Length: 288
Ligand SMILES: [Zn+2]
View 1 (cartoon, protein in one colour):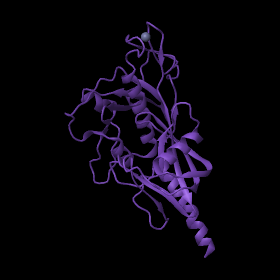
View 2 (cartoon, rainbow, N blue to C red):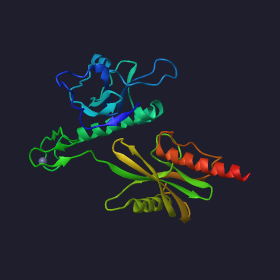
View 3 (spheres, rainbow, N blue to C red):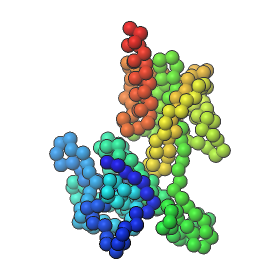
View 4 (cartoon, rainbow, N blue to C red):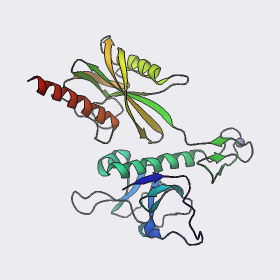
């Protein structure tokens, strides 16, 4: 599967001919998650419902947002009012369920759709003068017809850091995680900060230590509803690990052969953890 993000559908040679429904992929986003058809057989993954299924369910498809193309199909996202009357096997899946159920590409599409719908529903009125906004055709933008304020989807940068000390890495359990896994530390950028300063501040605030040798690892959009995770690895420089017990419930230096429960493979936190485990394991097997 190849997803090509685009703002507008390609101009078709005869624009009057509508796109056949089989060439459209729909992502239906409600306040509590994404609409999916649960697998019928044991172990079968959930799937995105087809346009025909959505029509049977009475879902309004007119006010859709075009996201791009998946192979030759148009990808569209549409909002769903909070509905608790969906007949089986249809259900609204939370982010946590999506992470477990979908492959990486479908999960990424679900994220895009969630982010776009979050923006569309939260920028219906002008934040400056209160007038109802209008959606622009030319770009992903809501504009106030009265005072011309423009509202684009908001993207909030957040750093995520794997701190190392010798062969160990610092993993922490966030008090708000619904599943008690241990992950890398993370936090949002504040006004006026560069990413290095965010890393320094967050790690000092959350676990009371100072770092050195900050290295960029990679990035991952986490559009639930609007984060972009920028991942780093760093080395411990000074300080003892102390947690506030409020946001971070517990933090500890972990060894590769005694890992606690870690986040799912789709997350960049897990990719950093896996890279550290791989590096330490291959080095110690070479040393033997
Ligand atoms: Zn306005």
